View (cartoon, rainbow, N blue to C red):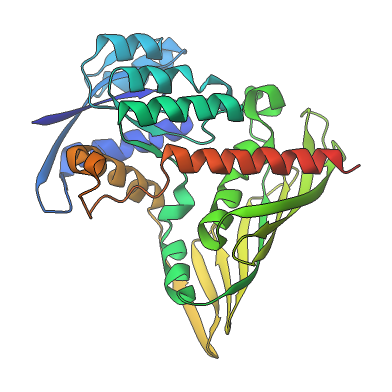
Length: 335
């Protein structure tokens, strides 16, 4: 049986997932039980017709300018929704209506109420829905969890400094949600993944102190209290000329530094120096996990497959959205 997939959105991150799908088609991919997965790309939709056609041409895929029409017209097993934050909602709910499994790029929405309604529809439809929180598939994240296993984390301090993207919609909070919701969401999700749920947040930020081409804060500093007892801090700015994504963790008899720019980990554990470097293929690992999960979706839905590796489902991603909206609110309210 051939696994048929569609894409809604053919831009930057979609092109990354399309390359992973190309490799799965050309080189083969197996389930966790060793069975070969036969997968094909059926269709691509994008509001920019030329972009959709360019992505579809070499892949013999159908082209649409409307993602809902794609879902209504094509008989597919799964769809990737890689659209700007403001465009989420209708595609996911339509996929749920037609029983199509979902891979969704973050953030899952800009409204927590709408996101929860979509989550309800997904749960009722019993489809599989994975969200693209790629840090959960980073090899340095895996290594950190191994080293920290059984240890109390005291503090996590993270830096996410980046330039302003060229995309025009990103610069409007009504379209992107602002940096915390659209970019730094990866960091907030990682803090949840490492230290558990958040009970309180405090923060502050600067209003276009260094740049004026955005309509939201250009730098934020947010402190989080976690149920586990951990306290964490996230520094974000979109005014940096270079990209930095660094995480520092202080734990019981351990200190780790994770650099997600060059995918390296260093530190000390029980007095021993640790060093780990990798050419990380986190985007491939993430999307291959989705393809495998869809291929085994019967067992995934019944909860009997131990091989399914979906590390962020829709319901969990809604919690990260809620956290980032809260972080943005506390940053804006402290003047």
